Amino acid sequence: MFGDVDFTVIKLIKTPQEDQLVIEHNGDGLKGTISIPGDKSISHRALMLGAIASGQTTIEGLLLGEDPRSTAKCFQAMGATISELNTEKVIVEGIGTQGLQEPTDILDAGNSGTTMRLMLGLLASQPGKFFTVTGDNSLRSRPMSRVVKPLQQMGALIYGRKDNQNAPLAVVGQNLKPIHYHSPIASAQVKSCILLAGLMSEGKTTVTEPALSRDHSERMLRAFGAKLDIDPDTNSVTIEGKTPLIGQKVIVPGDISSAAFWLVAGAIAPNSDLLIENVGVNPTRVGILEALQMMGADITLENQREAAGEPVADLRVKSSKLKGCTIAGDIIPRLIDEVPILAVAACFAEGTTKIKDAEELRVKESDRLAVMALELGKMGAKISEFPDGLEITGGNPLSGADVDSFTDHRIAMSLAIAALMAKGQTTIHRADAASISYPTFVDTLQALT
Ligand code: S3P
Image 1 (cartoon, rainbow, N blue to C red):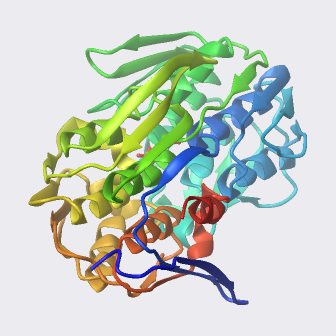
Image 2 (image 1 turned 180 degrees about the vertical axis):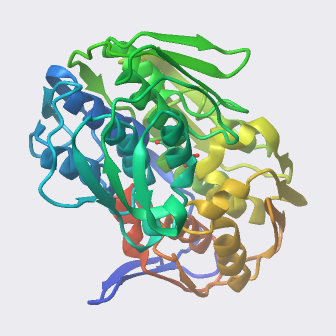
Image 3 (image 1 turned 30 degrees about the vertical axis):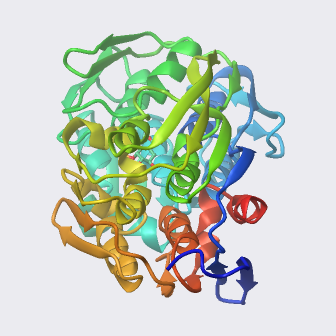
């Protein structure tokens, strides 16, 4: 099977329609030290809070992917001054919580659910201003009612396609009233949207969620001066409205969701010893570490520290003998974006891996359960799809195939790691999707092989 060729091909073929990533690997282990791009969630929040704070915010380590670029463009269109995006230092001149200007054109969130959902909380609470918001094909089909409904409970006027379910959306800004929202889903985008709308409203707004989702908004809002009460026993956050935000220095750690591809690659490729530097290890994001360790992965955290209110570590991964396990329940929100790459790990684990309670995957940038079942299936994986998850029986070699990202960044990169360990050549169509969250993914892949 794998390892019977003495050459490696990692080739990007650019056509006018798509980038195709061609992969065939000789089986050598992955060795060395790498760093990864900045955290996508934190990058969005730094740009947004910087824009609505008073004074200057500096951001070090911003992710230069397409998604944060969408956020930057939207807030520039509403009057914030944001310097050219780079990883060293981005300067945001904030315009204050009530300073957002009515844009002269449609705000385009591109592929980014975080941009659209968080921004809606801010737009809905700008009295007397009118906004229209849209996105790409994928984003226009994703559910927006999960934020539109609670915002309407606060008094928002929002109109959209399919009974306010889908973008394009029109927003007529209002003075909103605070609510206590019991979210039916553990979603940081929903929670953050309501908290931002609450920040703009007189009084106290509370969000309670069924399980804890990532808490980057809470950490950063506090750092910018917002008053928050957090009740960990009930997964509730309360924000006091009308508190001004003051610009800050934000240091963005590496994105654990991007590190996840190398953690799995290092674990499944024989003779690997890989150090991934400067990775954000916020407890609400480390489900991937717990799941891989449960499967037997040799991962250690080194040089643990804190940077600008977020825990950070260097992660070392060595080749490991993985075994199947069940991943379900409260861990799911803490590894929500890593399910596609976990499915790849499961293909190389002895026994059966069950991923349950993950129906949210169906409304991400693609239907990630259906797409991973289809595409890994083409490579010979024993994988079955369920309404809320996947079941994968590992230990059978994968074979190279023609596969498709469905324009979903995490699918493109997960398939690339599967391809690295498959026999024969794989072509990943529409691989350019990776630039949404990891524009240098192919460079790192080439450097490591
Ligand atoms: C994100 C929250 C998650 C995650 C997304 C980023 C965020 O979405 O999947 O990639 O930055 O708040 P949900 O809140 O919809 O689960």
